[in-house]
Length: 212
Image (tube, rainbow, N blue to C red):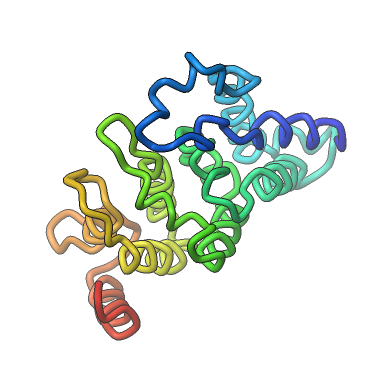
């Protein structure tokens, strides 16, 4: 079990060296040898396996005991998602899957990264270029978790905090405020909430984040 944890964490937790380059130069990362050591299909396969282990863990009870899959997913996701924005950018495409595998671990790590201020995940909001949007996976992950009632409140808080820090000038449509708005739409809400809950969410966000 320990070796599985370490192998998965090492493969998924590799920072993409392209993010050591200036944003305008990242499209040329492969030319300069700035590539990850493992392939995207391999990393995606590991992420998918974590989800399967977590959501179908009852099938493993007879051999490894109860809670094995979700515990393994929690440890791996917490090990992969550190405070640095470069780590979150490096696993951007995997974030929806990692969030599904271990929602609590994902939201805890995101909260810690937000607390890191300019070194944390909010720096992704200022990395957008015409060929790169390294926070799209983060927003998709939060939108996915908004359909899980136990996590709606935490998702709202994380999105509101991201929206309050989104001051970059670009025309990319997929932004934290748009994601946040989609969760509380009166006609087609993209979240597991009732109308009264959505009204309470709007009041809470307006009171805590006045600029959102």
